[in-house]
Amino acid sequence: MRFVIEESDEILTSHSGLALVGLLLGKTQLSARLNALPVPGRAYTEISNQDVAYAYLGLLCQGKSDFDHIEPLRQDEFFPEALTISNVPSSPTLRQRLDLVAPEEKCDWQSVILEESADLLSKVGVYLAPIVLGDGHREYLPLDIDVSPFDNSGTKKEGVSRTYKGCDGYAPIFAYLGQEGYAVHVEFRTGSTHCQKGTAAFLAQSIRYAQRISDKRLLVRLDAGNDSVENLVVCRADETSADFIVKKNLRKENPNAWLLTAEQHGTYTEPRAGKKVYRGSILSPMKGLEKPVRMVFEVIERTIQSDGQALLIPSIEVNVYVTSLPEAPEVIIDLYHAHGTMEQFHSEIKTDLDLERLPSGKFATNDLVLHFGVLAYNLLRIIGQESLREQDAPIRKKAERRRIRTVIQNLITLAAKMTRHARQTRLRFGRGNRWLPVFRRLYEAFG
Image 1: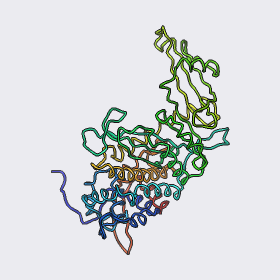
Image 2: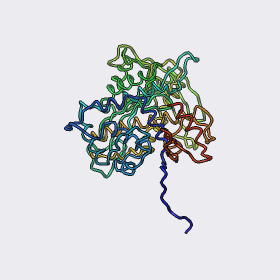
Image 3: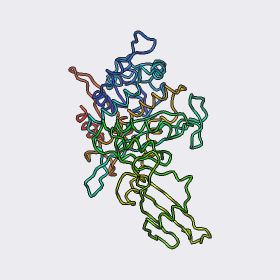
Image 4: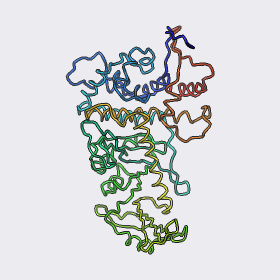
């Protein structure tokens, strides 16, 4: 045998990056606000609400969502120290506490989590790269909103039903702020819920959360499933004023009529033989709105396919975008296409945080779990974006945004030795650890 297996008396940890998470949570009022809320049916509990919340956030920040993953950490001396937890809950306690508080309206942990998440982004002063328009005179922060199906096929969890993607699961809606993709709002929904149901109220609340973080003008981007006058009314209201780009749902409209409109009001280019691309805009009234809205269109007429095959009947493709911006059609179309980046943010929540197949059988508990997921996602996003401020990371590839999985692998799951001496607790990293300069800089910045 090559190795002799022995047990050491030293306190070693494989997740020293939770110290960064603990510092960020210390900047919030989450512990005080949750501890002030009652636990239904319990007069006294040894495990506080803070212990439960912080322990589960500690799991999520390691990419673990199952309640049973807390058990190995109950004997870990570093885990409670890093997250300021008095008592690490057991797996049954963690599950039971979330089951108790999740459905109670008077507890409303969900709102507390979202408010503290938004306030943390404001306190830390996260950099939000603006979209600059009008020759540099106007700046906008994108607020991207969309539904993302969670595949929970083969389960009998409460609320699981057929989603528009053809799988059984849930269909939560998310709102992300900035090109960095900070999550500002989430609403948990059954799989069969129509994407527009309740979205106007969700949009209004998302704008309010975004306003807690930044005072820059917002640019709301929605896809064709949310083509509704209700959403435009929200964006035009004084309290929730925002610019918008919404893709129009053309299911009941005639493509040939749009081709005639494009020929009258647009200009065309011919990138190849047999393909004409018309772009332009018109002002159009909409029922329910006092003022008309601007519609930017892109109509593509093909008489010859790209492989040279001539078509007997021309193929017509139409895309229309309802917007409040005055920019050229090409700019509006490019801005909407950038809306697709939020699919990456969905992926990070579902895969990097292991939240697609949610851990509970109860709908309300999974709702609360997903809200914890949003806060954990933002904590890791803050760490990742802060790590990019200087060129001291051992990753040569230049990046504008660090993926959540990369943050977990390189900054959260760092091996270290914890020692206590002269009333100080120290973390000792291995010699030559190339992530140590980044970790030290982040710890000093957050501390």
